[in-house]
Amino acid sequence: MKSFWKLIDSTVAFKDKILSIHHNKYHFSKLDESMVFTAITLNDWVMIVPVTTDGKFIIAKQFRAGTDKVVLEFPGGAIDRNEHPDTAAKRELLEETGATFKDIFKASTIEPNPALLSNQCHIYIATDCVIDQKQSLDKFEDIELEFYSKDELEDMIRSGEFHQGISLAAYSLYLLTPAR
Image (cartoon, rainbow, N blue to C red; front, side, top):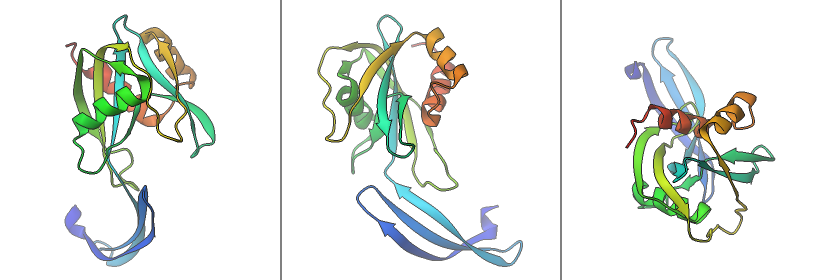
């Protein structure tokens, strides 16, 4: 299938410290036609599904400028340049929640939206989490922590209150992961 697609031109339409937007012109040999596709290049991300010693999920409540709304989601963030995803997951969990854990492991890697985005999101599960440190938030982060049981979280998913896409994928991976 990929053999029908040939990149014939690429221009950078925008670039800043967070992302770059490329206009990529591809020739599609099945139709013998070409078209420009927009692609957004970002750093890879991590997301962590943290579960406390008493079985509650730690949820980050924060404002998101993209939708101009306060959103409930699992903690996570961008992987720094030359940082391993395992290190980023531990760092982001500690920074955003102040939680330490008994075990943290990678559940999977997903592609959030390969139609537009170049990056991957590495999903981790952290077990037996305890909030025993202060949050160490970035300058423009404002995160409140909330704690929900499995039943409460699933009720919030069904009602649409917990709806952030990558968090839903992360929760699905949590459900599919054998107990450790």
